[in-house]
Image 1 (spheres, rainbow, N blue to C red):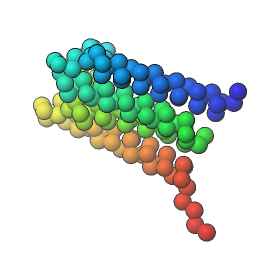
Image 2: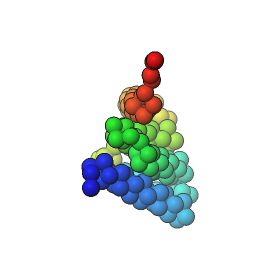
Image 3: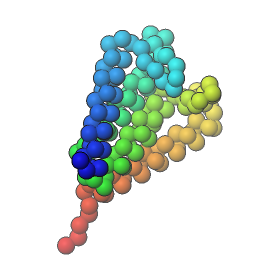
Amino acid sequence: MTSDGFFRILFGLIGLILAIIAIRNLVTGRTWLDGRSVERAEDPRTYWAAVGGKVVFALASLLAILATEQAMVWAVGFGVFGSKLVEFVVSGQVQRTGGRVWSRADGDRAYWVWLAGTIVMTALSVFILVTIQFPFRTS
């Protein structure tokens, strides 16, 4: 088996597992985000942010299966940064390890810095993914 085939199978499994987890989260109304349990009834914004992040990552993993060998890494990069971007925007919070939370509502400057950095990395991943997958040819 080539490394290309191995990574396509790996990304396919990751996408399938995350899709199953997202469906389970929708059915149970409970999910996990950054090591803590989130109930849909108690904190709907954080709940939908976590579910949305999982869906974006699952779709990006499945996109990696269809991408060319050179674009596969960038499809996964889009999944990593795009899923965090969805979580940051929907929840209005950047949740870090150690219980640190930077909130848009509190006007924390760190929230905006993390959001800007994530937007740049997501846009860069998408730009490189598209230019590799669909090269511009002049002839």
